[in-house]
Image (tube, rainbow, N blue to C red; front, side, top):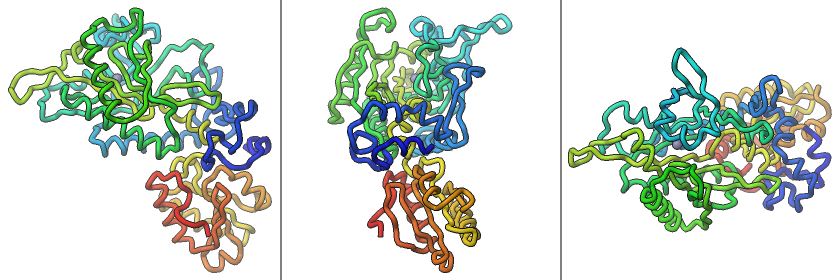
Length: 441
Ligand SMILES: [Zn+2]
C-alpha cells in the first residue's frame, strides 16, 4: 500500500489534483504503470484473480465489494428518482430468445456456446434487452404507462479471448448497469436527453470527466441489421439530441450496436487508451422482433421504441476507471474506509471507540488505527488514501474534540466531534467530491 507514495514525487492523491496527471506533474512512464488499476487493485485489496477460477473472472475483496456496492446503490437511487423501476431477470435464456432478438445472427461470435439441457439449448446471456422486452410484453400496455422505464443491474457474459483479458476492463462475466425505456416516438428525444443528464450528474459525483462524446454509426459488413430507413430515423433522432445538448461530439462508423446507433461517452485510461463507459441507444428493431405494442389513445395497437441506456456501463469497467482516475483516493462517499480514528496513546482508546461507534450509527465507514500499529506518523501515512483522519490526543479526549486531517493535507483546528461528523455526513450524503466545505481552520 505504501509503494505508490514512496515512488511518487508528490504525495498528493489524485482525488484532489487539479491537473490531468494524478500527482500534478506530467505522467512519466513508471507513473502510468503505477496507476494501472490491476496493480492498484491488488495493492489496495480491492479485487484479484486466480487461474483456478479462470481468466477474465475477477473476484472482489471486501474493500472492493464496498466500493462496488456503494456505486450500485448510488445508481439505483438515481434511477428511482428518475422514474425507473427495477427488475431482476435470469442470466440464462433459451437459444430461441436470442434468435428472436437478433443476437444469434449478429452477435454470436461474442457469446458463450450454448449448453444442451434436456433437449433444449440455453445460453449465458450477451445482453439484458431480450429479457426486458419479454417482461414488457408479459401483459398488455397502455400509452398511459409510457415512457416505461425498466432498469436492472444484472449479469451478462462475453466470450472474450483469454489474450485480451485484463483486470476489470476486459472480463467474461459482466455486471451491467442497464435500462430500457419503452416509449412513443415523440418521447425518445426527451428520454435520451434525460439519460445524458443522469450521466452528467453521475460523472460529477464520481469525479470523472468524459474524453469525448461519440455518435456511433453502422459501418460496412454484415453485423448490422439491414433496414436503411430504420437506421436513418434513429440516427436523425440521436443527432438531434446531441445538437440540442450543445455537447461536442464526433461521429464514428462501425461502432453502432447491431440493432441501432448509439451515443457513447468515451473515457481514457492512464495509458491513453479510450473505451466506452456510458451509452444511450435508440432501437426500432427489437420492438418489432418481439412484437411489442401498446394501446394508444385512439384505442389502436402501436409499436413502442426502445431506448437502451447505461449511466456507468459495466460495474467492472467503471470501478477500473475510478481506481485509475483517483489513484485509489476515491471520493469520500465511495471510499471503502471514510474515516480513520487515530488515538495518540492507549489512554484515548475509549474516545476512539466512541467516535467509531458514532460514525457507524451515522452510516459512515470508520475504523480505528491504534498505537499498536506504530507511530502516529506511520499510521497517518498508512491511511493516506482515507478521506478523513481523526486524531485524538489527551487534550481532545478531555473535551470530546477531534483534530481532523483531510486526505489532501489540510488540517483543521480541534473541534467538537458531533459538529465534525455532521459536516462530513452532509458532504457524503450529497455525493460531493469536496472533502470539506469552507476554510480548513
Ligand atoms: Zn439493451
